[in-house]
Image (cartoon, rainbow, N blue to C red; front, side, top):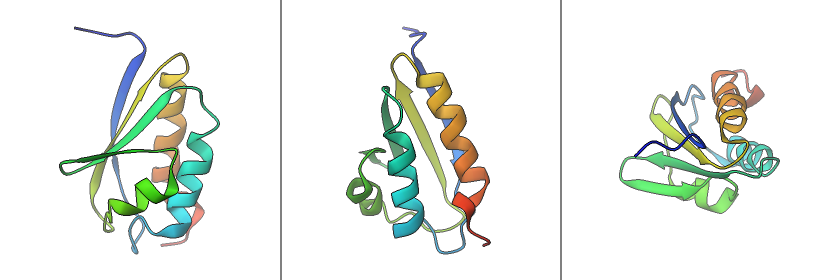
Length: 94
């Protein structure tokens, strides 16, 4: 079944220190700007991308590949924007 309001994208975690507190906070803060339901998957775990605590429980190391999933009216925009955060290392140098 295809849903025109469901989008997903694989993203690479380029931050050397992984998905630690600062990028997790930035991701949650930016995800909250969208009305879509946004999930972040790593391995067998799936968490709410709008919750910093949920994101931190993934303990994703640098270099890992995660999947962003969004469902809702602005899901496409959310995936595009949040994928850019990963590509830009959440504004961190390394």
